[in-house]
Image 1 (cartoon, each protein chain N blue to C red):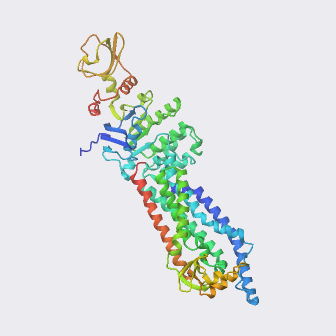
Image 2: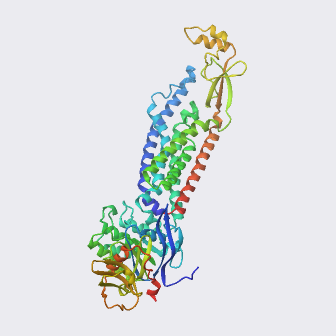
Length: 302
Length: 316
């Protein structure tokens, strides 16, 4: 057993989950620092939902171990108090109103900030007295977020909360989230396959692809360490050791690389340019992993 | 927790209360009429020496008798509409993700839900059984109480508890409402019918009594449940429920009149054949109620255990 690290919200070691003969998540080792907003990205079926479900204790890992705030997810009131979870598709009791849900939450939780939740929903002009089935997807997502935040969790896990929302609702949702994070000691993991919006609210990124962790680092570090290299056509095998190729594209007379740069690029024939987060993430999604060792988050924190 | 249970199930509770009140009113009106008829009959039959002729007392009450017998299905309804969706609907709507990440453990969540719904079913079952038992009082005095074994006494409570536990258990296994309802229906009916037909008659060793083949219609002690009757020969050999050509004594076979069976019966009776009746006496009614209730309550406990195992040990 490793010692409990207070600076970590989430820590997993070799976590895997198998359903039948299919691995939904494999050998997942990662660490998420406290007080950050982490984007959990990856293509559909990469294991994002599975990872979040393991972390909130709705499923048990087949291999490895996971820790949230230094303890394994368990059916234990202390643990349940510390987490907030918004599942995919925002499950709510369809016939009940937002007010009903707030009432339920008040009865089911030891800490419950109904006033704040009510105020936030009112600001967004969400009717509290109508069955949630009659509300829009954006309004339902806001109610789901409101319920998760009203628990006053230490770790908030959101599974594709903006996937079904239109751009305006998405912006409002993420704004609400940023506001809540700014208010207190809250660590957030937000899964999504929409990269664009996340860059604004997240400061940390985990990339899951092919059921494995491809990248787990500070977004600033990711941006600083990845470059696009453009040069005359050559084989990828010949590049200098400080360049870890994430993705290479060869045209008839050019080689274009997306690479992690661990030192100065000495070869003057490379034309080096900066990359956006989305380009980097997509480059990682395009490759099948294993060729580039995942960046350790711990290096990024210290 | 109780707040959640009430908020999610209050519509069903209102519905059940409404239906029960309607049935109680129906039974009250007809029950009072029936008691009147019965007392009038008792007052007059002594004068005309016709107290044994009970068949005519409640003629014309067919519809209400059907209603009373239909209350047999009420426990099943609890199982289908309260039990089966309890866990299954959470999974179908994904709301277990919401409910099971609040501040209460799954054990607490399930225990509270199961307790209230089982308690509700037991209470409605008891209320129904009480009303039907009261309504059946005049009939019980005339016929065997075993005739309406399933709708009075304590077994309706056990059936209700069992049906709900079955629904919860199956629902937690399938996690889909419709398959859970269908399976609950199938298992409940199959189990109820097979226990009533194959097990119940033999809960306790039957008493037997021999009566002449040509007997009056009083064949067993009043109020008892006749489980079977068969023909027994002069040396005590069992013939069966009726004669086959081979089992008729030769002398009667030759003397068999072609024009009717009366002659045959007279003949075999005079050659020592008689009827053997197996029956459960009226005094065993409550013992039987207890045994049947115990069977269903034990099954219910096992099903609740299944639900706990599925909810606590399996992935949500």
